[in-house]
Amino acid sequence: MSLPHAILTALAEKPSSGLELTRRFDRSIGYFWSATHQQIYRELGRLETDGLIRALPADQPARGQKKSYEVLPAGRAELARWAAAAHDPKPLRDVMLLRLRAAAVVGTAGIEADLRRHLELHERQLAEYEEIEERDFPPDRDAAEDRLRHLVLRAGIDLETFWTGWLRHALAELAALPADAT
Image (cartoon, rainbow, N blue to C red; front, side, top):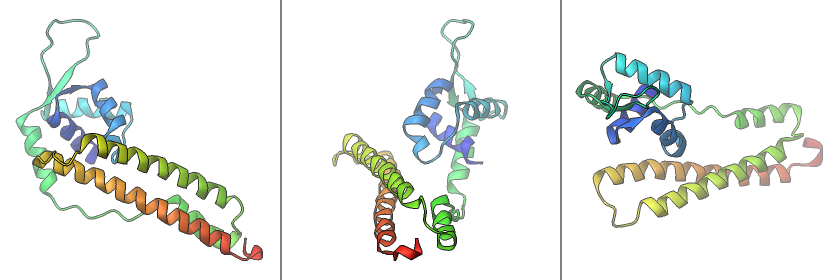
């Protein structure tokens, strides 16, 4: 049930059209909560039907004009309720970890190349997050909203730091295995 809340959050930050929302998901929210364009548009319709958002009045009626949406008081109340509610952490489900477990039984053929590929992907993501941090969160940016947004970004940085370190360790362990174990 978090996609509607991700959309409510984005709209509470800034009223937007569906297209603007999908772009924001591609650039920021999507780093930690992904959604397809279809899912976003479908959810906008539900949120509007439920009375949580509304389409802003258009300057001039025109066929095919994009609608911009804003959060209504009921949507803000729902978002506040959801943000304050307790949520249990989700257990880690990662296919690479399962593949390594399987490799212990059937052999490691092909796994080293994919570990290296994963390392490259995580290094790239880490660099992107660090670039965002440097650009968007200078030391003097200390408003509560900025501090909380920075905290979310720090989670991404810390996770990518963990994965790059763990993948390097996994590659070292794989390299140290006896030849007959692979």
